[in-house]
Length: 261
Image (cartoon, rainbow, N blue to C red; front, side, top):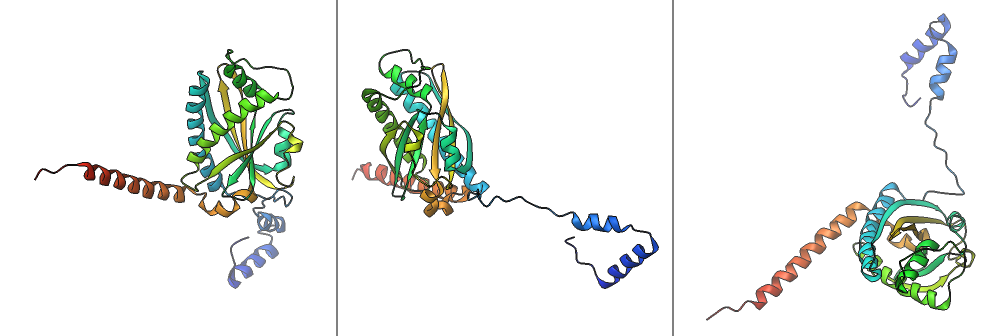
């Protein structure tokens, strides 16, 4: 019971129990009605709901930019959108993706640490087929990428990272760089298995082929800017940025105006 009883109320309660007006079980049940939240110390929640919502908003922008970029490069109808944003352990992420797959290890400069961009094999081979002049058909054969195919995917991932930089620009001047490409998830151990990560799942469609892209960001990587992952901070940054940009445009236009003497 959250409410504190006065001495008179306690006396009245004891009197009611002694006379039989109130059963002892009813008092016990009322006292036991407490809100209990289960907490798993092996899997602590390090991201608040507001932070997860902010990350989702940022990557909706990333999805729109990637849709436009890939559609232009592949000359095919491409659609990318955010399906979910979740927090889980790195081990759970590694176990949830296929083997082999396309794993880009991303250096998140100026942040210390790395992230992982995973592209579903169906999407990978559809992109490769389009780049080689095909219809963008996926393949059901599970195999590693050849050297030429890996070079093609490196170019695609580098282009995608440019969109990531723009999507994060309201929070940090991110300069993501592709470190390497792995096909076996076991070789992409960028953090301990029990470390918490935030996973952005992007539903991706290239032509008629559907699959997933996953962007996995460890908590240790974005911990220095975790306080900036709030809608309030982003909106204030957008307003100040827009004001500065408009002021610069006005100054440039006024300077170009010739005033006759």
